[in-house]
Length: 378
Ligand code: SAH
Image (cartoon, rainbow, N blue to C red; front, side):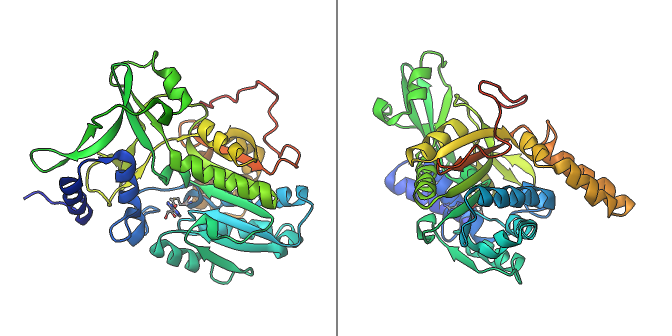
């Protein structure tokens, strides 16, 4: 008999009882099911895990962001207490690197109170280990809404891509929501909703794209990501501060199927072994911008990760790390830098978006002249 994961059994039973579920519900359950969800039980990052994120590639990533926040804090007028908030902090590596780098400005380091927003008990534990001995107070929250009020600097790396999204397929003149159902062999398969999605429930860009789309095209949108961006935008606007959001995705909305599953550093089928592979999709930065702005915040960028990191002095940091390293480590340092900024690696696919409360000047390095599109940004 075919091997099925616990979560697969659970999903099949639920669909047999109540009917097909949306791709959104499927994604959310695979990642966040309290018992069998992907992030719940284990540590999926790093070489031995399923994928590697930028902070796990090199300390240079977190250091650059720590320095960016130190200068943002000065622009904010140096509030004596600042909430350093991270959403979806993974192993805690980014936070540890940022805190180390923040020491370049002692007053900033002394003002920090850390708030980690993490739903996974296993990852909270890993984060606790990573932050053992840091000289600041660290608090954990299940949800962003639980973070106390106050001036803030907020960071999230590869957080939005892990929030669930919806898919719709063009059939005739309509868009039908994509569903997950059970076929005659008892296996999970993709299907479509019986009725087309109401026009009012589709984002305007998809409605406008209907004429250009061909039969069978897929478009994605994420009410959950937009709602989260709006909540963060509202917080930043109300309590003053800045945010920096890094993710892989595209600058403008367009139709396409980017739903993907990764397991042990390889792409696998999105319906394969539910709960045991990482499910994500590209982040639509245009939609995210709308969400932050709906909360009243101001948005700068996005820039490519490459453009952002180079402007933040990654090359100089690479040179100084090389200087203090042994020969073999020197090659490693350069390889890691290349991985972060290489045009065919993370450099162009990943984007960095800055958000402020609207009272601050344009933060460095987001001051590209009007109408200038960064090379490689798509
Ligand atoms: N930022 C880390 C990890 C990225 S993976 C890094 O760059 O290495 C996504 C992270 O978001 C995980 O820590 C996961 O547990 C967390 N997460 C996903 N959905 C969440 C939600 N709805 N609320 C809180 N945390 C969430």
